[in-house]
Amino acid sequence: MYPMSYAFGRTSDFGTTIASLFFFYTIFERCIPRRLRARVEKYTHRLLGFLSPYIQIVFHEYTGERIERSRLYSAIQSYLSSDSSKQAKRLQADMLLNSKSIVLSMDDYEEITDSYQGAQMWWVAGRTVRNDSPKNFYNWRDDGERRYYKLTFHKKHRELVTDLYLNHVLEEGKKIRIRNRQRRLHTNNRTDGASRYRVKMWSHVSFDHPATFRTMAMDPEKKKEIVDDLITFRESKDYYQEIGKAWKRGYLLYGPPGTGKSTMIAAMANLLEYDVYDLELTSVKDNTELRKLLIEVSSKSIIVIEDIDCSLDLTGQRKKKDEGSEEEGEEEKNPKIKKVRKEVNVDKESKVTLSGLLNFIDGLWSSCGGERLIVFTTNYVDRLDPALIRRGRMDKHIELSYCTFEGFKVLAKNYLRLDSHNLFETIEQLLRETQMTPADVAENLTPKTASRDVEACLENLIEALESAKEVAKLKAEEEKRKSSVKVENKQRQTSIKDEGAKEELVGQSSTQKN
Ligand SMILES: Nc1ncnc2c1ncn2[C@@H]1O[C@H](COP(=O)(O)OP(=O)(O)OP(=O)(O)O)[C@@H](O)[C@H]1O
Ligand SMILES: [Mg+2]
Image 1 (spheres, protein in one colour):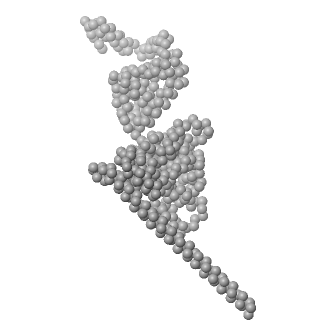
Image 2 (tube, helix red, strand yellow; image 1 turned 90 degrees about the vertical axis):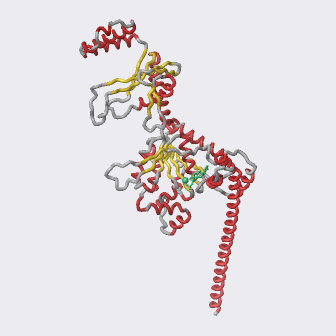
Image 3 (cartoon, protein in one colour; image 1 turned 90 degrees about the horizontal axis):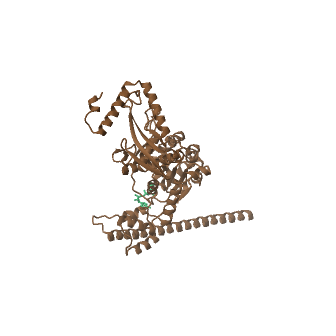
């Protein structure tokens, strides 16, 4: 209880007024019964509401049981963060869950203004403390504090706010949160032996790959086409809704090892700001588990299955297996198959079938979540079942191939900061005559000494290209020799056969004569 002498003492007029108001408010709160007080407050509010041309909306941080932060509140916090940092004098710094940067928001009772389609809005942050909130399992740490944002606007803007402005705040807030979030690279967990306990289907690390389309060595037109395609996909939510298709798109990246397939996936994720889910098919027990994995993939993500031709024997589900010999042949041609089969006893452990995978890509379940890319990579596109890569499943087929002169120029810029050099002409000529992957070109361009001698790097590359050309020439000659030996052998065999047939005929005719 504040003493009367303090309220009416020898202070300034302003101080006296404040102290008096506080005194009477204290009396009002302490001496008047709660019910009566509530009624007085109610009618005061009504009266003020009747007289005031302004409307207020309150957005609480937690609604109902205090378990999960309200998404709307978080979106408002993100939406107001840039205005807060410019307008508010007292700020709060927060590191939101999964965020990669600090979010600044206005402190309690700070006010900031926002305008939308010419209408003025006022936002205030506030806090109430309730001592009567019941403690339970979920809120045992609850200190009774309730934060909120209060929006005030003129009543003539009521429709604008309810129909458009709030949605605008929500959408923009979400966008800012997505921009600020720490993106992730997920991989699927093996679940064998864990059936009794719920295990996480995916585990993740932060995704920090530096690849971008700017640093990708490839034909500029092709690059532009891919970038446009990706951006169009990201902006096409309404279009997919209109045409009645799930908002997802399949990409097949194929080409020899070291031509940038994995690098392009990282560049795609960085361009679209999506998470990456690297699906290791050989660790998936069966089709049911594959579906469960799919359900747990969030939107704004890229699901990747690398080296699809050797992940599982998917083609074998359709063709009748010609066991043994054919498999061995495949392993010889593609060392990755051998590696995967050695690491995981594929046929025994994974029962994922081709139809299971087809359902994963475009079955009914594939539409949950939306805004997803599915990317397959392979070194041997012709080995894949046509059903797996037909348009509609893998909508865009992108071939990544050996380094062209255009690609080389990008790498020279990346690795040596070079736009032109008198050795470029020689390199252009050599790249036309021989095949070298961008990975090899990049390696040859990497400076090997601290002095970063540009000329030495280019000469290094020229040397490598010349020896690659020589090797290719020798190989071609060897191939030619082999094929001519084959032809000769065939001819010899047919002539032996013909001789034999002739002799047989002669023998037959002589026996007939006798
Ligand atoms: N087109 C490219 N542009 C820029 N860098 C490239 C390109 N291709 C390859 N590289 C470089 O070569 C390295 C290997 O490339 P990457 O792993 O993307 O090849 P890949 O096609 O996925 O090979 P694999 O088929 O063996 O998986 C990368 O680290 C990257 O630095
Ligand atoms: Mg790769």
